[in-house]
Length: 267
Image 1 (cartoon, rainbow, N blue to C red):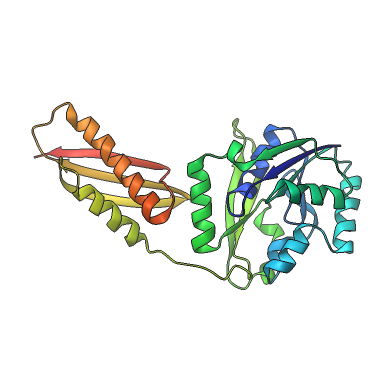
Image 2 (image 1 turned 90 degrees about the horizontal axis):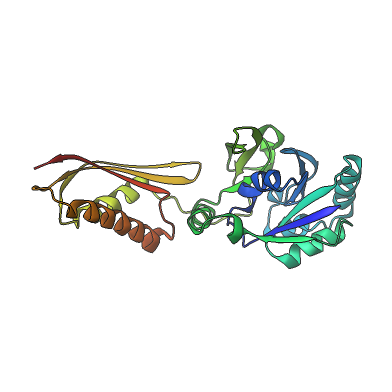
């Protein structure tokens, strides 16, 4: 069996990237937080996200329970898995999991910084830190609502570059994640408006919209600019985009995925 490891700190988007990564590297199965996932569906195991505290969650993730470990080992053999991706917070953790599941050694080590951009990692950490949202790379129908008292919803579909559906995700808020900070959309909009007001070529902002679809923040701004217009305007608008991005990093520790600025008129 060919064994891969994907590691990175908690909340950096490993589970979100797992299905696509496995497909691109022709990996059949995934071990993530206590689950065995094959072809985008859970085949065995119990998720660590079902646990009530972080200690039992870690124990679940590294298969310390004998019955849990045996269930997953048996399923790996039953499905005749030839390649597998183990996800963990460190190489040490994935090595430990590989050993306990009797599939060591690990042949290839990958790290989250190699497959996700810094912008994507920042956004994932922000969502985890403020909203307590965790992504499970399994369909909504396979996640039992009664394990979660506070939050569960459908995530998003995962597609290949050729638009073949590879799997689905489910977004949950485990009971052991207590720290949640709700930030109103108006807070983001007010920061954008304040930054726009500092730009010397802007007369006023006609509209400011902030959307966050699938954890991808996108900003839309339409402006009325001061005339007369010259070739410096393009550089000023680019500078405004950079200033908005810098403000988001400073205040929220993530950068918007896209900042789209439209010049609606000149006065």
